[in-house]
Length: 231
Image (cartoon, one colour):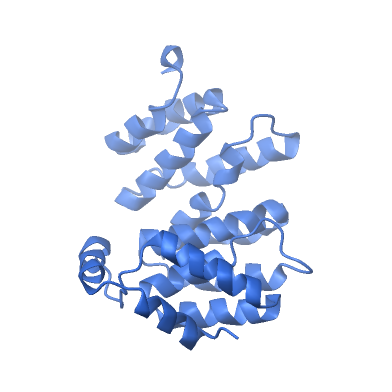
């Protein structure tokens, strides 16, 4: 059976020290890097998931995250990235939430947020918990509130409940606009850019109200996919 120790050993055996050093310089966060590419992590995660039950998978993800290697944390997130988790996804959601205060780099945070997106779509009532992150002193937690809710930017035919969630998250984003941290501004722009492909009127209204408080690069990025006549 795969354990955190054996899983890291497998990844380490597939690593490249030169690539690991490059990754360390690129991500600029001090933690162990093994030099393993994402497709290779995907292959290993797929094999591990096929070999274990949900309880063991949660334990494996928890151990990999705790080990703090770059690849281990990404693998932990990938282990929980699944549209439906049976019989109960509460443990997976709780584990993802427990990771949020540890976020300190965009790549790991984004992989964990993708796992979180699946759990939010499965149970949107969890947005109440996500909303508490919007006032956190931890920048990465505030950012996660936007990245985890990206699925609500993408519906072509949103229901009334989905539109209410769009407006709710846009309300969170409006509270972020005067925070000029690059990652926060980038996250606002990311949410708006994705939404502009499906709901340009809401994006135009947001920018009309808040562009003056945003960084210019974020305004430009937010509007980049708007239909030309609506820019």
